[in-house]
Amino acid sequence: MEKENTIANSALYTGYIEKNVCGDNYAGFSRHFRKAARAVIVEHDKILLSHEVKVGQWMIPGGGMEGDETPEECCVRESAEETGLLVKPKSCFLVINEFYEDWKFESYYFVCEVAGHTDRNPTKREIEVGAVPEWLEIRQAADIFSHYPDYAESDEERRGIYLREHLALSVFSERYYEK
Image 1 (cartoon, one colour):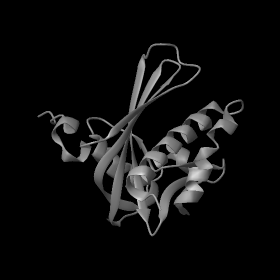
Image 2: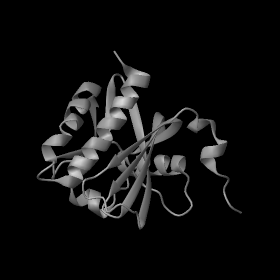
Image 3: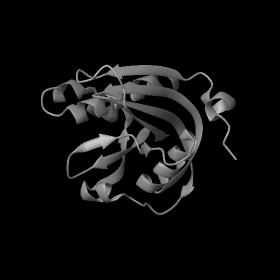
Image 4: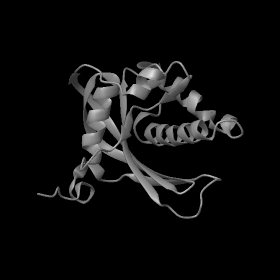
């Protein structure tokens, strides 16, 4: 039995914004596609991020969809694996389409609430880079991601990740957080 088109049929997706990011290295066409989901988890004016300690990189928790997962199922699974938190997606507020080389990356961002705890289950790569969940002040996270232009000449992957997370945190703050 096929799953229904979740986006068309779910109140979770009402009113989301869509943004496009096109890297300088985009080939002009996409042969490869990757869909992902990310969890914006905020408690007590702090946001939970995944910190890759050994490489000094930060990200909003999330990752690639597997099999016939819906974006919200991916968000729940990835959050549990990376942070040890069971989350409930409350709303998809943003979809970012990124175009690099011959790839299109589509990331769904959800505002989530914590529903419980579980054991973390990091991937081999996450173990190698020392990925750990860390709570940061929202302004501190915004500052980290705002430095995406600094990586333009040295680390295109990090520049793209930080640009994506900067956009997401900016939209989140405008809609849900401005203090």
